[in-house]
Length: 635
Image (cartoon, rainbow, N blue to C red; front, side):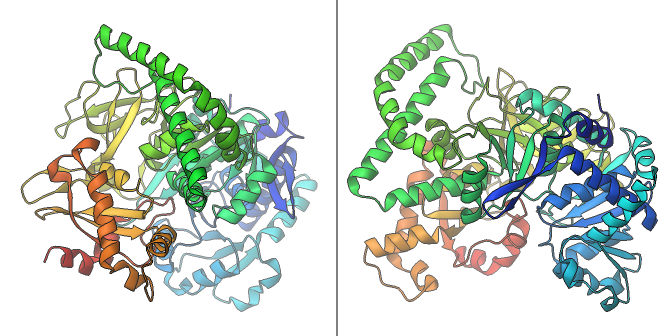
């Protein structure tokens, strides 16, 4: 069995040679690159890099968004025993300058001419940076225009390496074979939601633990079709792509924009999609927005059938004992649940059969009709989203992890799709829940999630202080996340330790459950709960502007622009009513968790600004950007 990523791709090339590994859309079809062709490209590119003078232990930048060449560059770098340092193309010049300097990078791939020019503009601040290799835009690149740095193209590097290999050059194969499981594979800088990015050091063995063990939870297998929409540099998408190459599946490259994604789903008919919760929220909102434009009869039938599907699914799961249980249940209670669940399933069955024919199947068909599951990571899936897709028979397997754990710690399985949890742990992974003093808590109690196992990082690059803060001498990693274990071993995420809001009265509030509940409103796109060192909680709300405009039209509210609309008393009353209905004792919220005031913001949150690349809110940055709005709420 392969112990390094180098052994993995070499063995897969031999085992699955003629099968499609990658797929690239050209016109109305996806053209395949076979496993054998992929290996040949990796070997040629890696040989070209060696000939450039790159060797074992060197740090190589990889500044690019999701594209099929990304994995080629990545595996070529790893094959020579070097370590890549990836980052997305929407990173600012300031971010890139910090990362390239901190990681001591002399050579970097860049996606295109735009990224080349971005880095060249700060080249004088990066004296160690010697070489830039441009992945695309070959015809636009004129190396003589960049006198401060050596500029190459990926195409030229491949062609040079190919000739060397054809003439018997075996340096790449020799270098790849010399790499061991303990060797560092990559340094991934965190998105920086709470400050300066930290470079997570992952070894070949860390990542291979995920690669080998994840398919044991989710049985991805030879020939399965994936559609790739997440940034490849992020640890979740990256590890998923390795898993596909390990089992002989294929990966078609798309983009998370509605027009492109929906067409690609139709063309490729994927079996799986790796995604973040926001993708499912967007699909949920799009479906409900479309149905809101239909007649009253169609709207009524839609909601009737969807509610029937949700109730039927919940009853089926309860009957099979697949609901999250955090405290022992008396025998008579379990028997009563079983009896009620069976009765409800029988009564709902006719509505579900009709609903599947008229509603559910139509939605599933929009995903290509052959989707076995969406795998959601990088954040918590909201309960109403979870319920909706389960109710219409579209399986979403929620997982949990972080860059520091390579990243997958746990993921739901087809056999035990326990809702509102991230499922059981991967093999060889240990989790314990502790209080703030480090005392281990029994199952069912909430606390800090600690992780241990072969997947845990080596540490933060050149940051011993930060490493010691989270990685204990006995190997336990403090994730900083809050959660609890069910009595049957599933993990549930309940919040983030550093997100905890402490009110003036000393009450500790977890904002995540409040934000998740508020996001159930069709009028709310993003929401961030605030209130640190304040008397009461408040909220910054980014409206769903399409829904808001539709409401204004139906209520005959006139306005000159978005700024005018969000200041309208009737609109503010709408949101006040939504908040009151959602954050109430009926939904399990305490009085101290009520939202006393809110501000509607006129613009969407943007990736690279308020949001990370995985669509998480940068709380510190948002607090700084909207300090004036926050202060005005408490005057």
